[in-house]
Figure 1 (cartoon, rainbow, N blue to C red):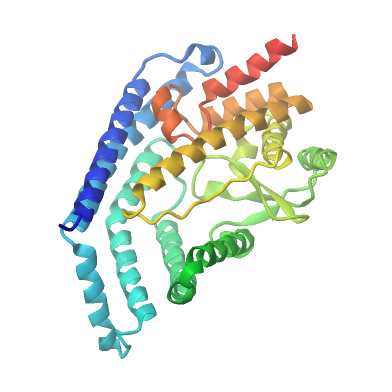
Figure 2 (cartoon, one colour; figure 1 turned 135 degrees about the horizontal axis):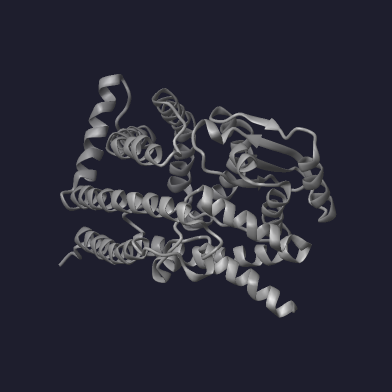
Length: 386
């Protein structure tokens, strides 16, 4: 008797949906709490807390609907065998445009093109509602409908440009890999990741945002001095116009070997009270580099390795949270403890991030520790020093 593979996969998907919905319900209950955590009392204003609470609850309600619709669609696609049916249909389409349906590469590209179109259609209403209703309602959305669709079209064009050669290479490796298939695939994906990490900030990201050098001044001098003191090979220091799309703020670094770059969101510069808070955030980011924190990204094939996908994601979150504590401690060791504390609070306030979090939910979903935990760790380090 043949093992009911698809039924087992659908069953596991439903079980994971129920488990994650349980965690979502716990988090929703935490978000509804009318008071700040004790650690944040006197740190976060009541006005900011109320705004954060309303924003988080709006996102939570939306998340419930989105996840319910997603599990219905995904389960139906698998249970009713829509993917095998569409695979056959995508092959019969090729002769209509003069292509050979027996060519596995062309057949696969035709199939994936259809999947991409379906994905865009089903996800579009949710993206529009999230951006132009929820984000706009709480003062975050800054982009026009034209900019939204322009970004969408650019993303589709990039997928059309980059997808076919990557998919073709994978199929050729599968066809000719033999007993070393897994090694060849791993090597290819590793090289591809390095290439994409190299070209994305230089060629792809500028298609969506404008990157300009941070103007000469005290902030630039402080960041350059910090980088120099840590022997961080800073080559370029950019400001990105994140405010054209959202008022959320952030900062990050990228680059290989001796060609490192730091990017500040213009919203971060606007929101922080002083340069020290910004430099403290950068000190935290440089801590990841100095402590040799390497973030691994795993490509999980949906609906086939779902158990591994969830386990790997949970494991990566645990590692990432540990790295965040270490980077905070590193910035504090450099003398930026108070400024980092203020910067973290400012980011929490301005992004209206959740103030109350359920411990089970955050442990499972968050790659960064909640603010309460990060401040407690910084304060604990202060007490030890005393």
